Image 1: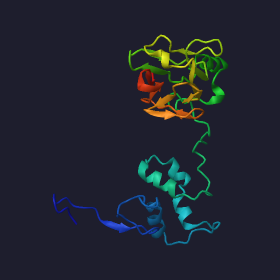
Image 2: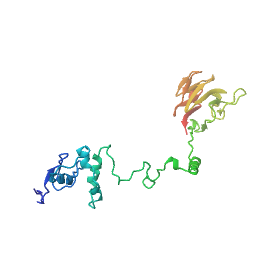
Image 3: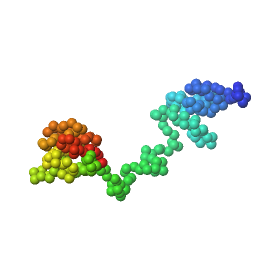
Image 4: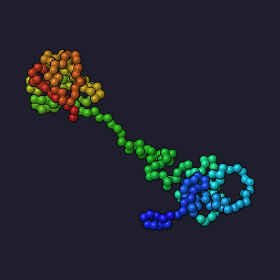
Length: 247
């Protein structure tokens, strides 16, 4: 009957005659099913039977507003009207006063930046194509760091096979080792590095003093996949050594 905290009188409760939900006794609409409770009270007061009409389900008849109610100046709460619309069957006809909604949203209703593809002008499309950044794939530059002098030899990026050795008349080297200390132990055609995509493989091509990878001999004709930090020694004694790196 009253609030236990502030002792404010509480409204009386009743049950909705359509769905049985608990509502206030003076409510005009059911907040659960949206039924018009005023129509139900008027029909209960009128004892005379109503004129025969086409059979319509009671829930739909109670939910559809009459023309008199639509023209009535009394405003229906938004929450109650929304609940009544949600309960309506999809097969029931919409009121004639409600304007038909267009399937295409207006420009003012669309979020900023969302423009239909059909409305983009040809100039905008051409401008976006002209100024769109082009993706360029760049391969990491590999290099050899000479351990004894800290000199750096860049591997040519345009070559798929890089030959290592000293100047000769048969196969000129792509990486000349003749200027480094103790280069006399390096053969004129000593080793080669083959590039396959982002992978690098080194191979001894029949040198006199051999090629060593991380202090282990590399058999002639076999190739080793190079990884950053690998130590390459051209000849015995680790006198001409390089560290494989990526720039």
